[in-house]
Image (cartoon, rainbow, N blue to C red):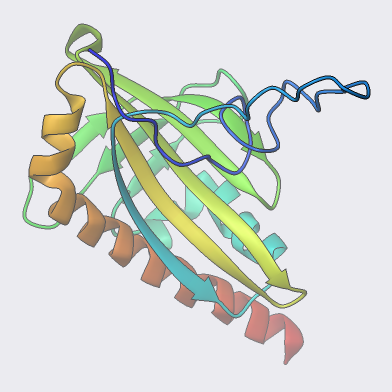
Length: 188
């Protein structure tokens, strides 16, 4: 079953800064098309943060402290490394808590964290991302989202999209408050 391609992610094998490196062309040679993003249904929330990307990354990277600020993932354990398995508790508004064990696909300090989760024998496959885009030395935008793919993933994404987005909004608001408080303390 073919899916419509989603937008490019910031980096990794899907994005503009892909790990496959730049393509070198000789004069007269046609450049290959850019890599396509993952397919499926995308749910995303973005928020501006008045703190450096490094401070936001510091908060995201410290999984052991997620319980202190993160309403969407009140428990997070593991090591952020490519191929590493995380152990998370997902708490979406109005839904029962769910235990997840996703694999880290890609991470770049101060920029991104991507992980993949498969359920029901691969019938549902999600690609979760937290991306930080520095706008200025003391401000950035955080994109917090998920692609729902696989045979049943898009229908799950459409059905749960509003609830998932509310969870991402709550996480973004809490991340913003935490990072801005840390930055204000360091500056003050």
